[in-house]
Image 1 (tube, rainbow, N blue to C red):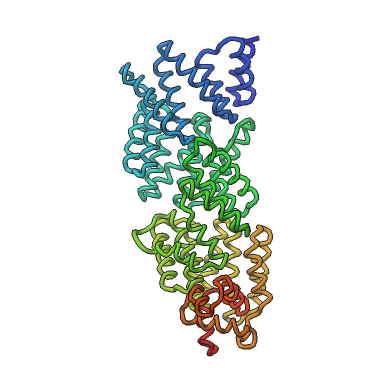
Image 2: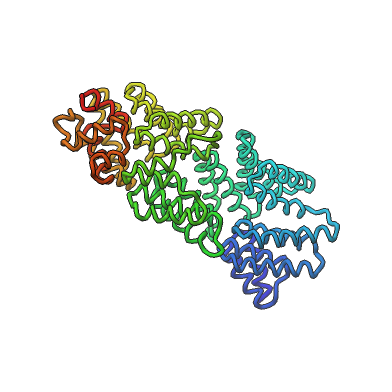
Amino acid sequence: MPRDALDRGRDAVERRAWRDAHDLLSAADQQSPLAPIDLERLATAAYLTGQDAESVELRTRAQQEFSRRGEIEAAAMSAFWLGFQFTMAGDPVRSEGWLARAQHLLDDHALDSVAGGYVKIPAGIRRSFAGDPAGALSIFMEALAIGQRFGDTSLMTMARHGQGRSLVSLGQIAEGVRLLDEAMIAITAGEIPPIAVGPVYCSMLDSCHEMLDWRRAQEWTEEVTRWYAAQPDLSPFRGQCLVHRAAIMQVQGAWPDALDQAGRACEVLAKPPVHPAAGAAFYQQAELHRLRGDFDKAAECYRLASQHGRPPQPGLALLRLAQGQIDVATAAVRHVVEGRTPRPARAEVLAACAEIMLAANEMSLAHAAADRLASLLANYETPFLRALSTSACGAVLLAEGDAAESMAVLRDAQAAWAEVGAPYEIARVRVLIALANRALGDDEMALLELAAARDCFERLGARPDVERVVGLVEMRAVRSDTTLTSRECEVLALIATGKTNRAIAQSLSISEKTVARHVSNIFMKLGLSSRAAATAYAFKHDLA
């Protein structure tokens, strides 16, 4: 029986039937302790079916047995895979311990081995996490040289992936992306161990996020999903990978699936020992709650994101904007347009800053944020960044009253978001196009654009956006002196002086929340999109 189970278990490993491999090799191990090479096979099957703790225990046994037998290279490789697994789990203490053991085995026996190249991979990852991409690049190049000397395709693939990430961080986007794509080709061709597929894929998504290259992330996600589908026993996506997948699904408009992935990520990453990516998981969950109008849930998740080390901006500022707390939102992002030139990952913060500053009638700061987005686009050309920058530019032009020019720019933004495949952002741009049409006197086209936007928002479950569109449709743009209440006229006059909601509240001796409601009513009744447009309207109709 043991020999039969062992042979069948080995065969299951070759067929990548991981559940069968785990069960058969476990049965064989219970009958008679497995040899270390078979313990390695069983450890891999346990890891790939989501049994991480058992995998560590089994691989530890294998490492110790290899050492006892004097099989130093195999013992060093077992120690490496343990260190690599703990690195990916966000456990640096045990990771460094196992990697140190691997290096000491090689040093103590003066062994020139491919294992020495593998041990460099986590060292490069740690250097990258520490904010030293140049140092990481040097380490990955050393690992690549060792892989080339020994003809080890797996090591070369992992090293080239690390090089690609480092080059992207250093601003050498084209060369970095070429190496990242090459590594992903190796994954789909089955050229690296299955245990490394998830971490390399997750790292690729992280790099795509850094570049705001969601289209590339989507394309490789489809390829890797097919790879996983061919091995249905696999426990596919875990940890930080779930966070990135949730972000991709959000962009694609699959919000229920995105919320599910983000929730799973929070559950997995927040368990002790807490993974460094737990904050990112809670932030992603908060973003989805905000877009769906679940503001209390969003606020709590932003709080948890901050608690776990992920700054809650710009999402929290956008939440406060949606709640009418414009002064709070403005204070949160005002600093964004100052300081050194931002990297692509900061583009979403700049876009949020432009939106909030337009709402606060801070035109110079809105301009500055849009200009910085444009300068980013000049250096880091991706479809997502182009769509983000063009949308901000169109919104600023509209707020300034240049409806014709804004219409042309917003149409470009709509096409750019269509290229990305982002239905929510397309609908947001269509609302701005409707307001531009209304400003140009084409109310029929404005209503058609609003109807299309509302249909999309309803399908997505974007409740705050649905409510805004309903208000824009129902309250047509008419002269304010026959539509606005006397209090709304007072508020409009004070908006025209440049006062914030807080200052208006103090002037009229009412609450800031009441002012926010009046401002919202004014915007809906007049078909306006910003305080700048409201100011222009007030002066045009002698209400300032």
